[in-house]
Every structure is written in C-alpha cells, then in structure tokens.
Length: 91
Image 1 (cartoon, helix red, strand yellow):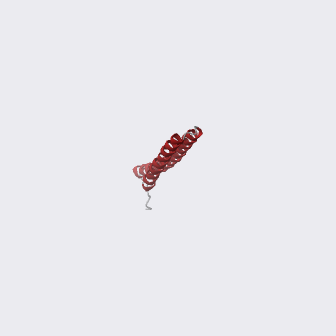
Image 2 (spheres, rainbow, N blue to C red; image 1 turned 60 degrees about the vertical axis):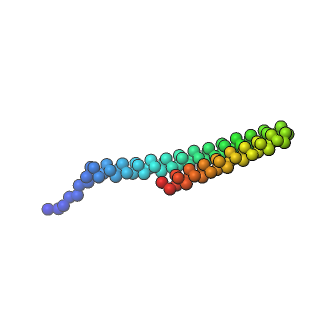
Image 3 (cartoon, rainbow, N blue to C red; image 1 turned 120 degrees about the horizontal axis):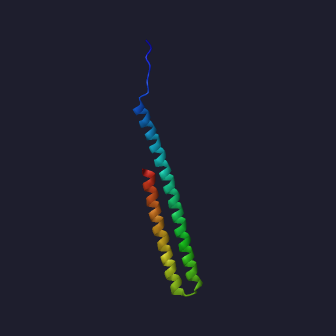
C-alpha cells in the first residue's frame, strides 16, 4: 500500500501565520524608514527656514541665536533618526 502524506492543517496555518508575520515586520520596517526620512527632512527644512528668517532681520545677535538653535535642532534630529534607524535595522 502506498504511503500518502497529508499536510497537517495546523502546520499549514502556522506556516501562513509565520509568512504573514514576516511580511508585517518588513512592511513595518519600511514604514518606519519612510517616517524617519520624512521627519528628518521636515525638521531640517524648518530649521533652515527659521535660520533664514532670523538672518533676514539683519540683527546680528538674533541671527546668531537662531543659527545656534537651528544647528541644535538639526544635530538632535540627526542623532534621533540615526539611533532609530539602527534600532529598526537590528530587529
């Protein structure tokens, strides 16, 4: 008598769930990467605009303060997004 192999429905379901989970994780990573890219660009653009607006006043101390604040915002954003990207890539 020939041996028939039957696929266990629980195994099949578990495989499908695992595939779905892998796809969900990958999509989450892509969405997070897109969010971080967008966030970083938005903050940099905002900081650039802030700095340009302060420079347009032609008040030296105000331009200096705004440039310092803009640089700080850029650096903090860079550190935040870099750390978040590293966290996402390691999982």
